Length: 337
Ligand code: KG4
Ligand code: ZN
Image (tube, rainbow, N blue to C red; front, side, top):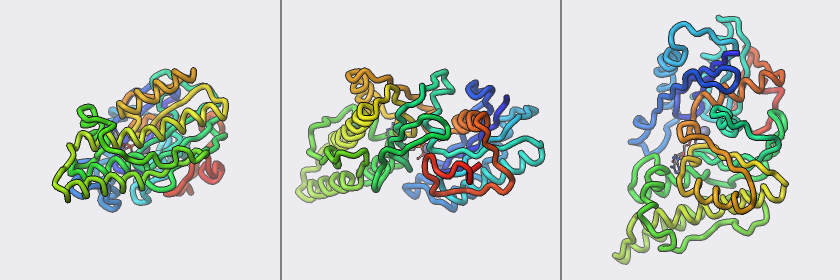
């Protein structure tokens, strides 16, 4: 079965063709990052308009001329309402005009299935850690329709904290890749930052206090005229944030008796996180799986991969399908279709 995936939930217009749920035939991503850079973050209305410009050329490239899919899988949430509407409208048009079924996909759930595209289908039940610009959560996934959120951020997402700290340090947008790079040259013990909610006993996160601590620390140091090297600040911030994420992830897997851990989302590209979580999982005898960087960040191949599994599980989305900007993982399966 040939599945066309369509993803427009945030600032990437993406389309992909996936055969049999796992074989990528094409995976096209048009990023708007250059458009949003001058604003230091994604501007919703500009994002929606850019999707309108980009989605048809992206689809044309993904379909490579005359490919005719058997199924359309589209992100219906969570995300920016105007952005989601572009992808869902196009998906409905294709489903209707080609007479093929459509399935609705939750973007955050799809991040947990990206490794399938590289031949690594995690074994149910598994622990999913999704860390991106919009999401930071831990969930137990026992099937496409059996998902339990164990914990999530109570304020900023991990990628958002990276982006805000980077903006404060004048490092540009998006901040994650720059901080990742700079941290290699810095001392992670140079600045003392808090490890928020490290011992909270639950699986939730809080990152906005850490971001504020970093901003206060550097502002005070600047005031005194002893600016610390940005590399040290970046490395210390990263160490504080990632220690909490790694600690809670391993504890969740241990407490719930889960053997396989899947990490996805843009921050899963981070080298320190890969290393730290890799070592912690190895110590605990856990199997850690994450995709290549290009499949960690937003893409439509992961939407097609999960769309295929949802289709196999009997889901169908009709032309009445709506968008759900605040869709939670595992929420409203029947409503979503
Ligand atoms: O999954 P994604 O492409 O979009 C969302 O769904 O949010 O993630 C984008 C986020 C941004 O906040 C970006 O700064 C972060 O992922 N990111 C990174 C790295 N690469 C991207 N954060 C830390 N280290 C990286 N190497
Ligand atoms: Zn994402």
